[in-house]
Image (cartoon, rainbow, N blue to C red; front, side, top):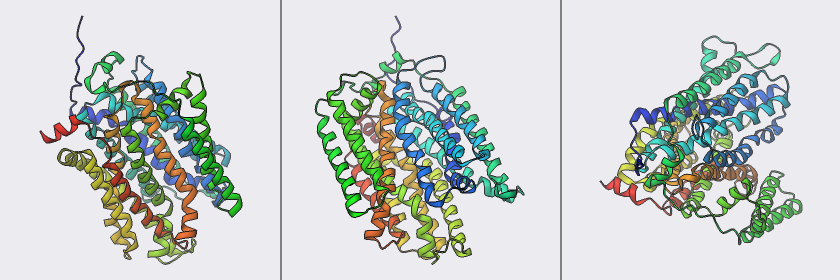
Amino acid sequence: MTQLPTRKPALSFWQIWNMCFGFLGLQFGFALQNANVSRIFQTLGANLNDIPALWIAAPLTGLIVQPIIGHVSDRTWNRLGRRRPYFLAGAVLASLALLWLPNAPALWIAAGLLWILDASINVSMEPFRAFVGDQLPTQQRPAGYAMQSFFIGVGAVVASMLPWLLAHLGVANVAPGGGIPDTVRYAFYAGGAVLLGAVLWTILRTREYPPAQLRAFADSAAQDAPPDASRAWRPGLVLSLVGCGVLYAIGHFALEKELYLLAGGLVASGLLFIWLSFTRSHGMLREVMGDLYGMPVSMRRLAWVQLFSWFALFAMWIYTTAGVTQTIYGTTDVGSALYNEGANWVGMLFAAYNGFAALAALVIPLMVRRWGLRVSHLVNLGLGGAGLLSFLLIRDPRWLLASMVGVGFAWASILSLPYALLSDNLPASKMGVYMGIFNFFIVIPQLLAASVLGLLLRLCFGNQPIWALALGGACLLVAGLFTLRVHEPETATTLQAA
């Protein structure tokens, strides 16, 4: 009987390149979605105030889909492997949605296609995160997640600029009768091809370890005992009571309606934890909630890092345009040439930080080898926090490019190092479901930001959106400090010192 090896072999640079290349396509689709779907909604007649409600599909879809796909993919093994069947299914559906979305004849169809597009990308994305943990030994995981960050940066830059590039190549940027312009249509067609092609490259150029081999590896031998959920009713009761308190406050003080989202989420999660304490079910919901309640200690600590990090990012995405145009360009008139000049410059700033993130992804593995995972993430989040705080001081918009260097380093680090820290502390048999649950701490701060930032700006910052960016900068600094509480595996520390 052949004895299975107990150490994962190190992969070459090009093997890591191949396994991460599909992320280029996924980010291409995400970037096209982020940059153009609001434009499509407005073209189809959406009221500006209704667009946030239409967009809520994105974080809610990820909240639901990723843990389900993670749970199922942990239990999958067929001719394509463990994770690759979900790469393929998600890529095919997402590509079809990209081809159809710019041709949607009505707003409700476009909104439905956004749900399909976002759900499909999430079907592929969560297994891609787990794929790195499955395939790479501990010392190579930072490089693997950094490679994913590199492709995220490249895909975001190219996809964000694609309609602008097509317009400069002579493609019509205004459609007859006010429809979707050809620049957007052709960009989405190209996005569908790039997404499917990149994911197929990863599927065809990689292999996966069979379940028995994966369990035999020494760095996959974390404890996997079922959690005791008998006391889950305690946090459930607290969450439910807090949610009811928020509901009362909304009605009593006539607070922003967005807070209903926060209150509903608190009550729903509280009731699920209470149900967990008393249910005798053994189904998927019971297992996912049990894994959420019984998270490893390092994952609990990383959750705080993610909460503050993604709250900061969402504040930046929502308020950079308003903050820059109002404070630096000195206008709030959305119909003025000055406002649109500022808004266009914000688009270039966003492309710039994604470009800097692609470069940062090449530097981060060197930082990790010298300083370790935790200190490297602390430094990068500090750079991002300083970049956002600098918006308070800069008045020449060109100098904001320097701010985006720090934001780019933080973005690349957020997309890589927490996953490296997480995967080193997870049992191999639950890598997928825990990566999906980890997505909760990306989605929840986005929903929290959408719920409370408007209230904070009104009550604390005199409706000056530039302060939302400063708040985001402060949150990145806090997230960096929380990183120091996360356990770093001894194997990684030994390798860094060697």
